[in-house]
Each structure stands twice: as structure tokens, then as C-alpha cells.
Image 1 (cartoon, one colour):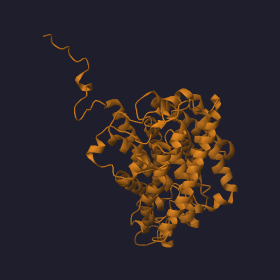
Image 2 (cartoon, rainbow, N blue to C red):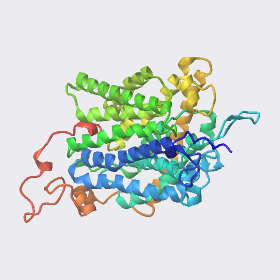
Image 3 (cartoon, rainbow, N blue to C red):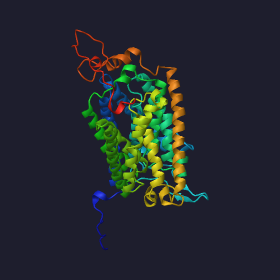
Length: 488
């Protein structure tokens, strides 16, 4: 009897064992876990550092802790009920059925999104169910870090006055009743997903929702103290840049991981992300120089963020030249709304959005969604989208309808978050005040947490001659607030 020929596949790449099932693609799984880690690093420590540095010194601990707490709380809520509400079986056209994602039998099986099968009107399958070549555990964690960073972004609107106890209640409620709705509707197999609304990696699900919800929450919480609104200088600009750098580099996982595979579309997404971010940063800086005569490093960070946000809904769907167009507009339109419109519109003046999240995330996210409907390239769309023959308006044919779909999808996210976030804030305020006490607002971290970011005196702390010197930066400076928060 002739001997069987040796297996040409190296042992390291052979499947069929419990730990390496035949459906597992090690490259895809490795990239998905790396992408999830990169997105996680954007929040912890990225935005924790950025928030702790960009605010006034007396709010450094509170701001950083709000971000850290939100991320941790989301992780637990996500695996107990949130994941399946976002990516599980359909309950409603905009919501999945709640349930835990904790059991071994569930987590070690091949990942799948059960509501994503796309059908033609006659019942034939148009696009098969999403079934990546890695375990469900990788999918659950990857989607978890996106949910986490959404709440962290939202926190930027209410820094410097929201009660921490109210924030502890707000995080699970908003995740449950707002985030899961957007995620299922656009990504998990909901009505916007099947209608063909394009949101490659969260321009609507993450940025538009957090921007609108943050702006709404800021209304209900009320403004910072008069003193803080007049003067709110960053306490450490260089450390802020470190947080911003983690945010930028982490976006490779944010956009590069969303094809659920280490494929050519993932490469396009990463390249476009960096092209747009760089362009947007430069444009914002140029505008600062032209109109305000000085290049602002805080403004550059804002431009970087708006570039990253605007390319997110179309990162793997547009060509490189279109990414430059995205960057030019993301560096100028949010700049205009933040630096010009904000100063002239009484509503924006009335609502105290601490870090301008409305401009950097809501405006930039909606702008990116509309531009995606304009510039989405047909061949790239075919690599990613469930609706065949999808394309942007510049490619003719049905592309014009895509812009209307993008506007309608954005309107749904705006409306839902505006209403439901308001309900959540009103409900919480019936149990615990949304706002800190006047004493806490005056003193800051020392009153709220009994901790301070720096072993220095100033910024609201009550004078104690046995502990403090004679210097307080609140009484030594009379300049108006500058930089990223100059208009808020």
C-alpha cells in the first residue's frame, strides 16, 4: 500500500484542533484583537490623558476619572446585555434581543452577526450573513471598545460640573437606550443597515450620537461656574499632545478593524484615515494663522480630531483623493461652526459644551456621513456593504439617492439621541442631582474626590495658610480663556 503524501500545509497553519478550528484565520484574529487593543488604548489611557490635561487644573482628576469610569462600566454592561442588543438577533427594526455574552459555548464558536443576512425583495439572498473567521470572543471585545469610547467622548461635553454619582447612573442607561439602538440599526442588521445607509466605522453610531447626546446632556446639567467659563486654560498642553497622539495612532484599529478581516479594504481604511487627519490638522492650523494670526496647538488637535471623525463613515469606501477632500472640509467646516457660528448663535452660547464635542464629533460625523454618500467608490463598496451596487453620488446612477439615505440616517440618530438622552437626564435628576454643589464647583477635585492632580495650590482650593503659599493662578491672571475651549 502506497504511503500517503505528506500534508503540504505547515503544522502551524493546520486546523482541526479545539484551539485552532478549521474556520479560524489566525491573521484575521490577530488583527482583530490588535485593532480592539488600539481602540481601547484610545480611551485608556488616550482620552483619559487628554481630558485630564486639556481642562483647568482643578478639574484634572475628575475629568480623567469620568473617562476611566465610563470605560470600565461599559465593559461590564456590554457583556451582560449590551452586545446582543447591538449585534444579536432582531427584536425590533432598531434593536436586538438583550442577553449575556459570557458563556464558553457562545464565545469560542465562530463569530456571526445573525441579523445581517441581506435579502432581495423576492426573498433571495443578496448578501450572506456576516461570519468573520475568528471566535465570537474577538467580536464581542472589538465592539465593546467602540461602545466604551463613545461614552468617553460624550463625557467631554459635561466636564467640570456634572455630578459623578449622576454620571455613574448615566453611563449604563445611555449605553442601553441610545448606543445599542444606533449600533444595531446601522451595523447589527437593523433597518438602516438593510436600507443601505453607509457608516463604515462609526461616524453616526459613535461620533454623531455622542456629539448630540453630549450637547443635550450639557443643556440639562447646566453650565460650568461663571469663573470657569471665563477662564479654563489647559493645565498641561504637552501631556494633552500625548493623549492626542494615542488617539490618532489608535485610529488605525478604529477604522482598520471594521472589515472584520485583515484584507485590502482594511489597508485602504488605514491609509485614508491618516491622509484625512493630516489634511484636516493642516487646514485648521492655516485658518487659525490666517484669521487669528497665531498657530494654536490646541486648534491643531481639534483639526486632527475632526479629520479622524469625518473620514470614519467612509474610511474604506472612498479613494485617497477623496480623503483629501474630506480633510479639507473637516478642517474648515467644524472650524467655522466652532470659531464663528458659535460666537454668534445664542443657543450655542447658552449650552456649555465644555470641549466642543458638538463641533468636533457631531458636526464632523454628520459631514463625513454626507461626504461618504457623495464619494463612496463602487468597487470599494462591493467589498464591504450588504447592498449590492452601492455607490456615491459622484458616480452617477443611483448614487444620488445615497446622499438622501445618509441624511435620513443622520436624522434618525440625531432625533433618537436628542429625545432619549433628555429622558435619561430628567429621570436621573429625580433621584440624584445632575449637577455638583456650588462648593464642589468652586473647589474642584479636592472637594469631589479628595485628590488633586498636582501638589500645588490654586484653581479653586480654599486658602489654608498652614498648607499653601501665596500664589493662586485664579487671582494672578486676567486673560480670557484661550485655545480649544475659548468659545465654550
